[in-house]
Image 1 (cartoon, one colour):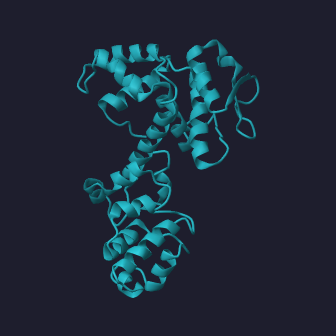
Image 2 (tube, rainbow, N blue to C red):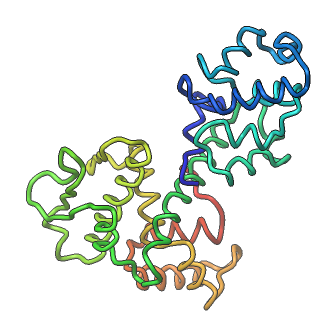
Image 3 (tube, rainbow, N blue to C red):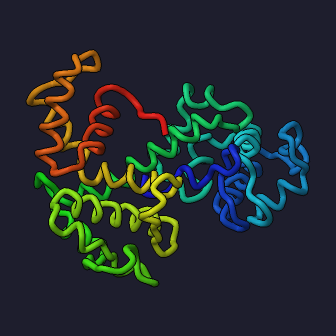
Amino acid sequence: MQSALIGHIRGGTLLTVTEPADHGPLGAALRRARRRAGLTLRAAADGTGISYSTLSRIENGRGIAPSLDVAMAVARKVGLEEREVLRLAGPLARAGAIQLVDPDIRRALTAGRLSPNALGALRREHLRELASEFSASLGAGRPVDMRMAAKQLGLAVVACRTEAGFDYDGATYRIPAAVAGSHVSQRSWIARGIAHRLIASERGSPPKCQPGALSTKEEREATYVAAHVMVPRPLLAAELRKDPLSASAPAVAFTAALERVASRFRAPAGWAAARLTEDRVGELPW
């Protein structure tokens, strides 16, 4: 999902779009469907929770975009398919739109609202997809060449003895000179820079990082994406097919798999453990 499903979630409410005029295509489609159905604005708006004047503004792409529930309610009145509503509701990838129409997911929504756990799960899924899309262009090398990966993003990596992080425009990423002697530490630093760059690029803002504040939401997300870039899902799956690891595997088997994955991917043990736990045992809460 190159476009952010999570970008449509504000304060626990699932919205179709977040800025005025972004819903022009959706409004136009609703207007065409309403006219085909021979309904007036009043008739189409009746029972949907909005006034006919609000529906008129929606149809003309003016004002705040409708909530998903409102858009779906109007669509049902005028005979427009739900999938078409989701496709036109903003920068939402087709795959994400189809998933939202799934009955099981629709039942998980209550008046368009999501629980904190559901929001977290959606965000993790989005971050996984973000990392997977990027990792797909890295080839099948194991371990992933982090400097080459950074270069693909136009990110220059330099060692420094001053403050680590990005320069003012986000084109250069400084890693501590002290980690140059540790291959794994150097790789993890670069992976975190790549993760920050991916997340920031999607948001349309310069990347920032706070190496000394790893407990912040931004740094936790960057670490999560970095672990997926360093240990991509397809490569991890291929590795585990050689020696399957079940959720009920004894601790000694998990430890052996952890050592193998950390060594093969040149990844920090903590990141390898998180990837193994997530892919083979279940989601890690964070």
